[in-house]
Image 1 (cartoon, rainbow, N blue to C red):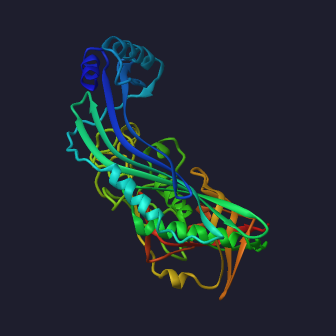
Image 2 (image 1 turned 90 degrees about the horizontal axis):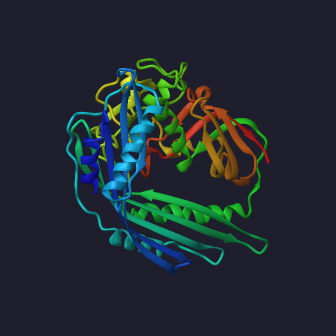
Length: 423
């Protein structure tokens, strides 16, 4: 069907076009406790078509997109393409050109059945007790294949594994019971990391049952040891995204430091072509551009913008791509050296967010540990807030790194002078 769509597009009058055909073979398992409730196998295909049309003598480029079912007839596909050509005239973006450089893909198969089996075996290794156990979990293991074709001569196919596990754990005592939810995404199953993550979650559930109210301490150091820290690195990476820069949501400039009077560690983050077991190891991005290793920010100084072809064109950025894997360098101290003094260590938020425009962080605490020297007290309630543009001049990054799917980052980040509101 994809080849038929391509022929229709060539004859449609469109000035440019793109087709993305994604096929996914997935194995799914749903458990209550460790008892299998149901399972199924999926084999699905999605074909997305984008039609581009020059407007006002080529000053603007209109675009419209829609999926075409792989079961559609040729007449149905032609009608959709004709409609897209008409709809493209309603949008006026400054003109840009699609990627043209031919690239080489990777076409191989990954076994979702084996991936799912690895996850099931890993889940059976979780150390449970009568007070903390697994309520339920769901496993999604996929072998994905994506073909991208455009009117500029790119026709490339890549394949990659993707897997997700959703877990609900319970902790209880004589007075009450709570549950915690987790979702883990990766390429294939990393047994050791999964067992550690869920074991830690069971401990968090146990500590949550005896947690005291978070004290109101005003400003203090906050240490982020979990996946929530990734959002801090995402904020830095997104500030260097071409679309964010073009829309004036970032005032960062190439070659100009993002902050002054640095008291702690600086940030060095790179886009990398491949990370072990990432679910986003794409040799080619979604628009047919070749992916490679590239510095984004080095010692707090922006180096490269990255992103989709449209906004790269607008900024005049050449030879870049949509980055999907990122690696942040560690700091000068080990994690044990950073874990000293008085600080708050949140491990469970009801939500944690970083505003892309302002850099404001906010998180409502469900469980944290208040450290005063050797004394550690589980606490809950209250919140942490602050503005990263003001805080990143005084941070400590651990030498040790930890991977969360497509991000490899320091295992802990400690930020000074964060505002802590008590319960």
